[in-house]
Image (cartoon, rainbow, N blue to C red; front, side, top):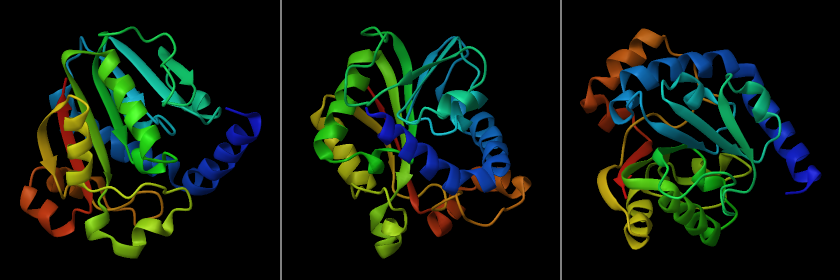
Length: 222
């Protein structure tokens, strides 16, 4: 990774997220305890793949927490005790031993990888580092429900649906447990700021997911 790449990512993240950072943090402080915590024990070792500003991993209660991103500014956003890996996720994950992680989580990141070959390499690193039975959890925009809106973000590179991601996970040796086509609405980066109590209600009413969901949810295991 070059310093220019890191600088470009820092500028892109700042332009996209800084104005909404407090609300995004508050949203993840609902999403993690009210939904994603069911997949993560407090004794787990958890890695946030493409951590962004760390909203997910900061909210997780776990024995060990790791975060990967190519934006050097991400380090400043992480809570104390989180080990940060500033690197390309398609390369071997530095300092993460084989069969050492309980959960690899990623949100709105895989579509930003430069090509499908990079995505496969990242999945192979996830599988290498996960313990047998360890979970891979992915959340991301579902192309089939977005059409041209999928490309509203400059750095979206790979078109994905829940079925295409599930297929490549299976081809890389994962077992797919959950492949929901619709889960959360499309974006929190520039969308309206809904009251958080409505988010709590939404998470407990899957019927609403089918009406408003534009992001897929995948849960797989090694």
